[in-house]
Length: 164
Image (cartoon, helix red, strand yellow):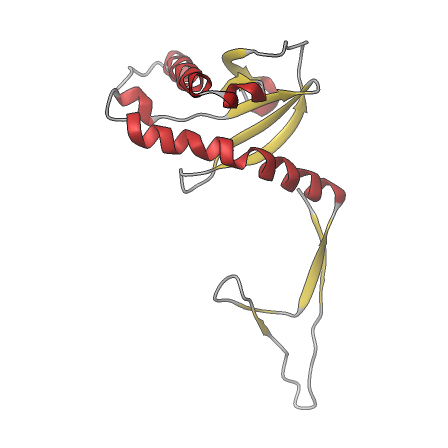
């Protein structure tokens, strides 16, 4: 994702530098601005389109995580759309998915796929691979958690660690 931007250094007669206070965080910086590039607008569009569905995963997880320790783990989700992976991963807060990458699928993947496998295009990380119709029913979300268990099993097998 990229943003085209520019900043300027503005001096007054006393050689003081003009700074601006940001509205979104308590921070002073040089005056400037940015313009979203086409890729940024596309990424934001994808993020907005799927954010409510992905957020629901965390809402459901909060209700079921005490059933079994494996249900406390979430993994990347790769939505298959137009022969592309739209890859979402958990942000540093651990409470939200963000769109991190778009990559071509390595093979034809059928509509309605429900799988878990490592994504070569994402550093070999195991991911839940689904099409967007998974979000249409509660059963679809159950399937996501089932695929998360497979991701966890793959990660444990790869690292040699025992499931907890």
